[in-house]
Image (cartoon, rainbow, N blue to C red; front, side):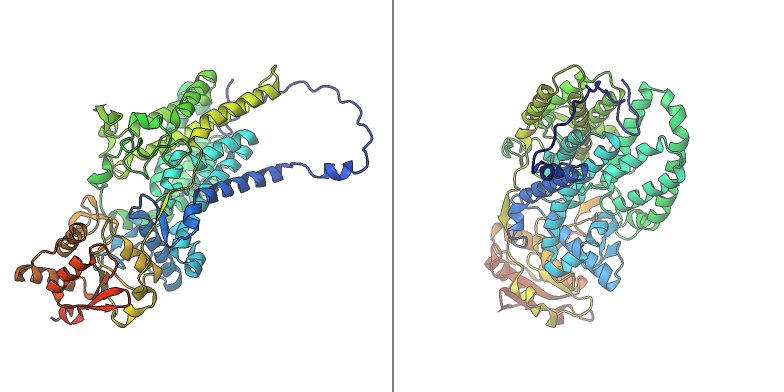
Length: 615
């Protein structure tokens, strides 16, 4: 049996309908009961509500206190996202340039197009950010990202591709709440906000049989442009997956090419022209503008999945074990496989069962292809290196040099989801069997596969509140235009609380340093690294914060560090009184700039006389 590429739906199998017996007269009250029934619309609304409830359940620990709670294995990403949300406020209210800012990493600034500034998410969230703050906007994005992705897949699969609601609901559930999505929900709302991808996939498949390729190409271009301002890496993955899938279909049925190539080629040409025109300037800024970089930092370029990661349940799931998974993924937010043994075995069984179907074979080939790429440059089994991976041959190619290879596992996850949908629909409509028994077995099989990786609430921990010195606007009396507030320690990867301070004021003050990707040594076009130019004072204070040891500084070090403060045009240095190792940090800063004073809940040094540009 074959299927249409445009719908992924085989010809329906229909059982002969028995003759209907005459209906008995209705009893009193039965008419009212019959008026309530599960219409298609009500079914869809119930499914959407279930997805929203599940997403709220997953993020419930953060919703208790969005400003004071964060994922337990806290990294720098949530603070960075909150900073970008505050930047969107400035774009809307003050007309600031959307693709570059010097509100952090002053004075060099940061190329926001090269740093996933989520403008397509941040700008619609401006009202919430203004009313409730960027922390609430962050958890709202995570919640809606999970629920919205599942809802979008359900709509496209149930209406256009699979056209079977139970099957679409199962696939959409896995697309929205897979272990990989739950893992990224800790830190990466830009990655889990995949609600445009099902529509992009659908419109590309429509192009293979389109009678209006120009119109369909325009629609696709608008979707592509919007997705580019959410996450370009996921957009690239979608294009690659569609290319491999369509190639896998055409290899098996070459006659399809004769009917598909004209509308597909015309539609993609229109899409490329329009999306290229809309994205030309933003992409120029990203790749050739100030603080552009080429290639990822070495710290993430070789992130890959361990083979065993495909058979272990994800950490934020019912059967997950965070400690057991520690060496199977680069970190807690990059568990991009973790299907568990039961789902892995079921997926293999589905492929064997439905192996005669062209679409099933294409889905399986696509999923396997990207699973292999996700292993990265070194293939390993339970943290033991086995061989060099094929990614080693691709990692230096343009565009691919900016990809995190472990995330190719996200594509495999979508292929698994659609295979589940195929299997459910086939089992639901098997001819010549007891359908009630078949459906019970189907439900039991799904429970066996999906229960071990059922979503659980994200583990959370508390974080330090924004200092009262910031929230009470006491800093405003010290900072003038283009002057900076320098936190102690200096903002950097692993110390992003000052970025939250700035975000809480909608970026009304500038800070040096921060967490972002930039060219090494601040030279546009160099390979990327996390953070800006190397900072002597930043490294010194970072070392004091981690060790608690106060160094003795000589005059040469003082002069060099004062030069850095002048370069940043620093107005004040701020050290929260409850900062880790606050006392050694205070003594170190006093050696640099003299005694400070306590103001509210911070130690404060006014250095304007020392850093004035003519000094």
